[in-house]
Image (cartoon, rainbow, N blue to C red; front, top):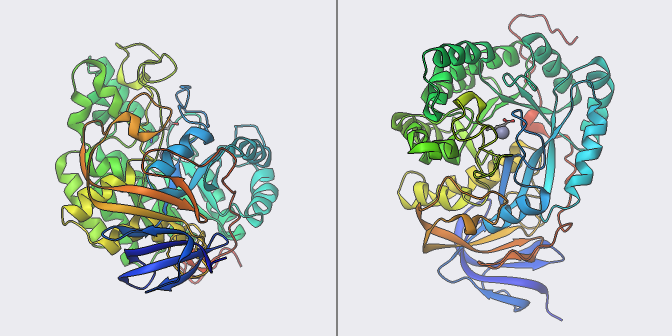
Length: 480
Ligand code: URP
Ligand code: ZN
């Protein structure tokens, strides 16, 4: 019997501390050795010329949950996690949605039953749609203590949105319990007003979603949530920053010393508002919230990444079927933009696109890429040190990535439940050739090998990154 169950040999390995050509030895699902000339493993893989990276960590994913539009999500845990594995992602955090009037604890239990089909490791954001005293004072602390260390709130969508007063209650409760609050920041009433004005003017095509949700909608809500979080000294993670102005709001908060962080998503880096103007109903394939932006915002996002203001790139995988009355065609092909459900799939495409558009095109370096897709999300969401790094003692979640492999993205490559990808035809340089979870091969470059049920729910302990700073706008500490 050899010392290692698996040795990945001679790849360019990005570890927590450096980039070097070395071997990675795996024993009992953990990384046991990193170095040159390791003895042969039971399985020995030649990774010469390939990159050996920590498995991707995608902390903004929607699977098997209701959409605000009433459309049917295209991925359950079995199909969604197959897609993740096929794209080099080994850990996801999904949304366990509370129903208004319902219990959060029961919602998490029901969602946990669905997640039993997961092929890869996962955690849950507690999606609070109804912050009653019972939820905030009793259920939330118990759920956080049980390892669900993030909360999600929406500032828009009729069935999800919380009023500012409710958001303040959630911020206070999350601060007390030790959970990170994540936010979908858009000004609900402004979207409603603009939507009605656009429809009255006969402007109802898919592309007009971007006119109903211009950047000011996102900028204002981002500014507001940052202000509320600052006043309560509660760390905050702004989801899907889509362009310059909301990114600048985050940068200003960070400069003030606030624990305020931001992600953007793959789609905001490569797709744009002109995609919503494609012929006929095709534009519906690109309808998401926040809306896609002009090219100048894409360039601004890359700069915000290089400046470290945005330090996570997630997928916001929100898969709908296109040619389906339960999907994008819920109200037919002539539906006005406000009746077309929002959301795009993107779990499998995240690593290949970010590597190709980022590293291969010289916009970011390899270390930044790894930080954006694995190390930072793992750290921010309390999954480290188990996840997000190639380090001794960490889970052997590894993606072997061929930086010379050219691929044209197709829907079949995504291994998801949707019947389309918004990235169809996009040529990428660099692609995963193997994905391992806890030392097991779960994607061999063509087929997903992980079975439903193989994934584990990761309980997250209290962690320092999201501890409050202890600073308030006045000498008064409202929490005593
Ligand atoms: O467009 C996005 N990001 N998601 C849609 C979510 C919903 O519930 O409609
Ligand atoms: Zn989302």
